[in-house]
Length: 321
Image (cartoon, rainbow, N blue to C red; front, side):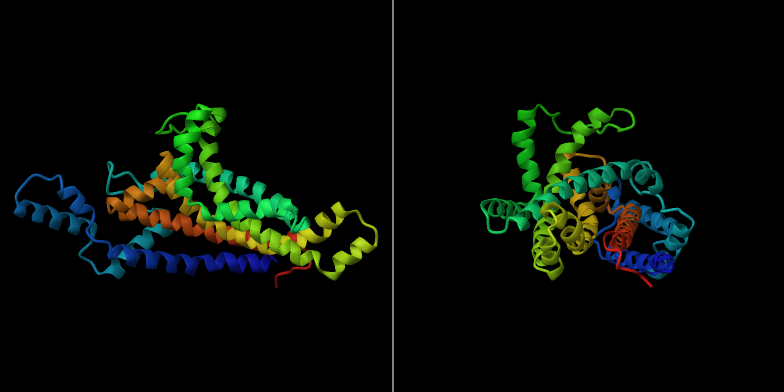
């Protein structure tokens, strides 16, 4: 197991290089750059603007070939420096991410808790009571959760639920949970529920399908024939084996949660990395875009590694060599 984990950690290096190279190449294809954004408000003749552009491009090293630019950025990354933002007082990307990561991380963790808390019990009960009225209701709810766009549900929530519950009006003012936990949760629980519902739909359907498959196995029939209580059969024998594919899906949802946070943070005006990604793309703030993509790639890689480790905890028969 230890060797497997070490190998997976070492594989992070080529994976990150591949991801960052692709993202860097794609940023080269974006129309315009941040200098165009700056020149839009620059007053002066065309010659002044061209001189201004030439000076900045030389300072930033944009006249170098792409591979040289990427190599310089990668060398900075190895030293722990993600670069400097072009917009907003030239703040370092490290500082920007340091203040925004807790917001997105909290939203993602709360959303996953909500999604799992809904999906697992509903999926298990739906499988145990297959083709009953309860099963039909729960399956319909899962299909509804899969079908409803997250942004539409978020807008509907703001228009209808916010006034009814007396929630604060937009834009939300994010409160640090270490300073005021109650106020923080008051602002975060609605977007977390909206994002968690989107996660719950596919997890619930997969949980139900895997539970139905496991409940038909011979060892489950044997456990029942021995006279074990139905609760023990479901929890100790069926559920643990059914959870293995579900854990895989939950691990893959980590990237979806990060992507979904872009929408939720934009709608609910939460100062996380999702909202910053949108402003960085509109301003062609490439260092910020690259820094956020490095972070997202790390989250997905680590989430999948944790899921693989969880396999052996759920099913002790699984061993990695």
